Structures are given as C-alpha cells and as structure tokens.
Amino acid sequence: MATFTLTDLEYIVATRAGSTDVKSYTASLYAKGIGKASQKLGEEAVELVVAAVSGDREGVVSESADLLYHLLVVLGISGVKLEEVLQELHHRTGRTGLEEKASRGQN
Image (cartoon, rainbow, N blue to C red; front, side, top):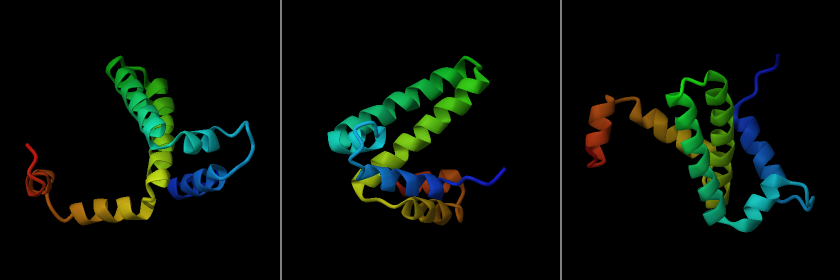
C-alpha cells in the first residue's frame, strides 16, 4: 500500500478547488466560502468527538478523515499552507505543552 500523506490531500483539495465540475464537493465548498467551510469543519469535529466518546473506533477513523479533509479546505480558502501549520507544530515541540500553552496566555 502506497503512503498517502496530508500533503497529497492538500494537493488534491487545491486541484479540485478550481474545478468546474458541478459534482465536485470541494469546488462547491470553495464557492460557498469560508463561512460554510468552517461550519462543515465544526460539524466534523463534533461528529469525531461523538464517535470517540461512544467508543466507535470505525467512526473515529471515518470522522477523523472528514475532519482532516475539511481542515485542509478551510486552510486552502484562508490561504494557509499545510507546511505553515506543520512548522508551527515543529516550533512548539521544543517546549512542553504547558509551557507552550502559557506562552499563548491560555489556561
């Protein structure tokens, strides 16, 4: 099985974003804008939480895939590259989670 990465998914999302195919879900999300895309991202996050809390392993896998897809759509519409997010995560790994959180002024 070939490795599929988030970078691969980011490329697919970006490619489909400009599609004129009326059947393209990605293109329709881009056309509806950041509000709708963000709403979908939130819905998928909630569905993932519900699956996790209920112990639905298959649901966690499926909803995680949906969440990652919708995250990449929101990032794309926002003009944020996945690499920027990964760089931020890399930057944060030099500190403990509590130190990093404190640096952002969050409890």
